[in-house]
Length: 468
Image 1 (cartoon, rainbow, N blue to C red):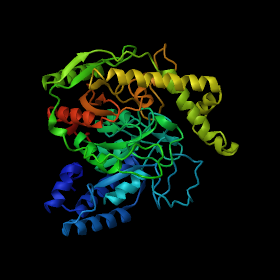
Image 2 (cartoon, helix red, strand yellow):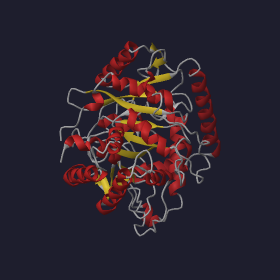
Image 3 (tube, rainbow, N blue to C red):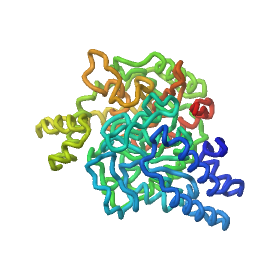
Image 4 (cartoon, rainbow, N blue to C red):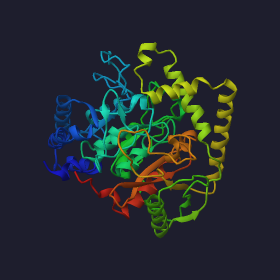
């Protein structure tokens, strides 16, 4: 098996299929061999269906031979996070409370669009129980590990997805993001991932965590994220919250560069107390790189106060709503941390919840005004590099209350529903990836992808591979 083959980008795979230089079958066989080799070490997948993947690859190969691909990702190996429905495969959501018997008759919109585009679906990737935390482990599937250092977490809740892409066990992955669950694992594993603006990628059933939850692509490059977004953003009538379909090719304009873009660089959002020195240095250097490419980079904070409490009310209310009718014997099987989140959510009064809704609206309005002056906001993706696997969070500083201290840069933009993306911008001294975050105005995924692609054209952090 060629390591180069399993690390070939989706963009290059499609180009090679068209030129008949590679075949979907040989690529899928190489990826499946990689999964057999590495999944026992990393625990990225909870379901792998080799037979279905090879059948899909053979069908894709026949279409390419006839010059009639189904869509933009025909023959490209992809995984689905185990929060999203997949016809014929169980969707257990990392929980012992879900009956594996199903029936599993429906595809989520993302799954359906990938099938329609001819993608080779490999299997389901691990998630913490109901995607509740920023790391990936559960009593059902065990601990998922980071390919860069198997003693560290790949982040979460899309940690199985990020581990598989980083390790070459698939070309692309579908992730979800309700507070950073695409951007955190991409930062921890050296990948590119975009939380598209809310409603850009249809979702069904809607997340129990409500309108903070997004679906999006995880890949090794911004260009691949754009290619995948072309497929995921296609319409689905089941999602009544989805944006009207915009027939946009997100790969167009990627090469426009950043010349003249107005980028606000905020190292701490004006209030974040703890940022690892190596993270801060890498992101500061990335700001200089973008300025050197012609962007107008100004160090300035967006000007809002810490919104942790606003997020906490929204998120824990969702946890309570998800679990409030669960039978007692099933509730006892849940992750204790999720039980605690449910208990917190049960204590919110209607007045407190509506106050949080109003405060969220004010935050969204503030950022819309902010983006009248700035095209993009640049921050770290996470406050720290990856920490030990198997724990919810590293030991927190004495003045902090919970795990949100190490994720302060991600969840504000779930509240505002803006497009936000993480791309690798360097490495710590012990070889762990570090990510930067680019946040764009509402419905301007094009600006985020364009700047991320320009940055990757001028750097090579995204080309490095974990020492497996």
